[in-house]
Length: 320
Ligand code: C2E
Ligand code: MG
Ligand code: MG
Image 1 (tube, rainbow, N blue to C red):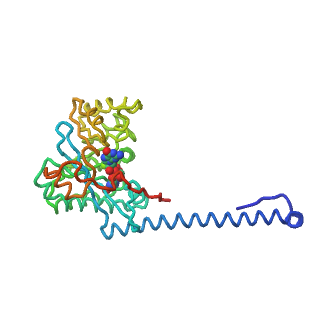
Image 2 (cartoon, rainbow, N blue to C red):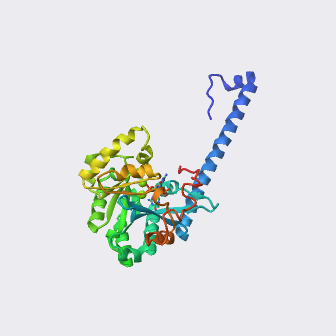
Image 3 (tube, protein in one colour):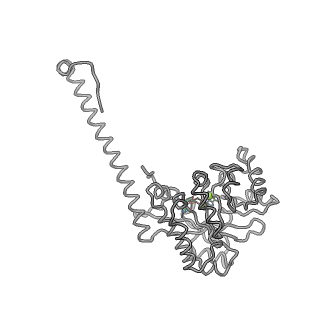
């Protein structure tokens, strides 16, 4: 803290000892406070990051699976793999938070690799037996730019004896528009046979030209649109245009965040074939529970991951 005055210091000290003393004390206290806050933020952020890195190293992240159904017959056609982390204080941390930190600190690729390994461990046999079924993994911008990413996928799939078409890729919309390298990697993923989805569609750079330019297989309409159904929010008026646009471009549509029968009916009325994902059709569950669901040995809703939507504690840490 700096105090500027137009008075010679000797005079100031003589006439205003109390005021100057007060300012010095205030400056000192503010400095201590700012230092303390910085130290707390630094320690928590570092602690968060090193805990996460330890969890990756010790392989203690869990992967849960949420079904994606065909709205026409409610049969499971795909599944999304979602990462879960409970920190060393036993607090579940939202993936929105830990993925962001991993991205900012440059190690999200380690999480992608871990998820791919788990998916193939959990589902290789199922994927070999059901060629029409697909598991989707979320990838990050850094993966698209990483020259090791495609070879990593290829060797993991070859080792597991699983076809590339059985592993779908979800890429958040805002990642993809940014760089030429993203477009090239998407092209190469598709050439290899992966099914590429644009995730959270409608929240980023959506435009017809952009989608055409990208050349993907499917869009996942963000849950913000689903939430707006039955309200007069302006987002609802855009939905039919998105569906028409996807139809024209020959893109598969998956709707996220279906929680109510009313929302499901809205999309089921469409003449297009639409896939849906949401709590109405099943929350994310561990692999064995998902397999029972897929094999028809359990009903949707029988297994509900307790932390989903109920008591998931978002981290208070945001990366500095
Ligand atoms: P996302 O890829 O869009 O995943 C869908 C999110 O919506 C999941 O949140 C899922 O639990 C939630 N969800 C599903 N159905 C409903 C519903 O009916 N209502 C509501 N309100 N939510 C629903 P989750 O698991 O918390 O993941 C958040 C985001 O974190 C994901 O969004 C994805 O962007 C990211 N993420 C999760 N796992 C991974 C991962 O392994 N790698 C990467 N790069 N990102 C991941
Ligand atoms: Mg996703
Ligand atoms: Mg999404």
